[in-house]
Image (cartoon, rainbow, N blue to C red; front, side, top):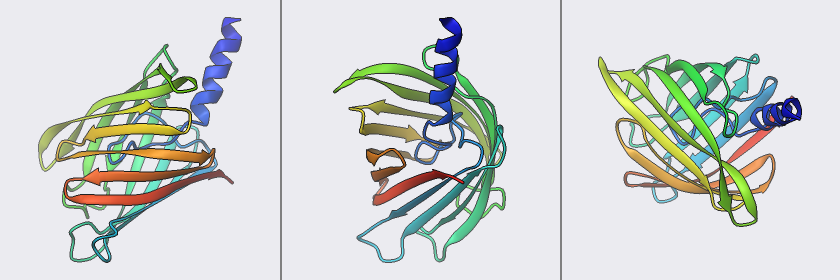
Length: 203
């Protein structure tokens, strides 16, 4: 019985949402041979957009290419690389990940090595019990250590609330998942209100 429970948890972790919460890294991994595309836009400011394309390179490594233009003169394109040592199992063990955000040092925060630990627990919500995550960690940016913390809490099976602090600013919002592979997001980041979607698919 215990073996069946562990296998079920492993499957749940493999199909879970991927590497970032909003901006902070987590120990959830993009599954192998899966891509995730995310688009965000600030509708009140022309040209303020974000694009993210993440790929599960192996069972442990993932790569994300991203282009951001929030308050910048032009879009900055860079890469994130993450090694996932262990994915979180609900109510059993936390997940551990390490990597580097902004390898090319193009963003305002600069290149940031990080370590992240993610705890996954079941929460009573509308319609039953669903998993939520708490992530804590540290990143090294501009020769200083910054704490990172974030949480995703299920409101129902289709709606998840999320909030985080990446060491520089607070971001918060919610996502609505009408189908398994697609999520719609509304986020607030300082003075920006971002609308977008996340699409994930195996290849």
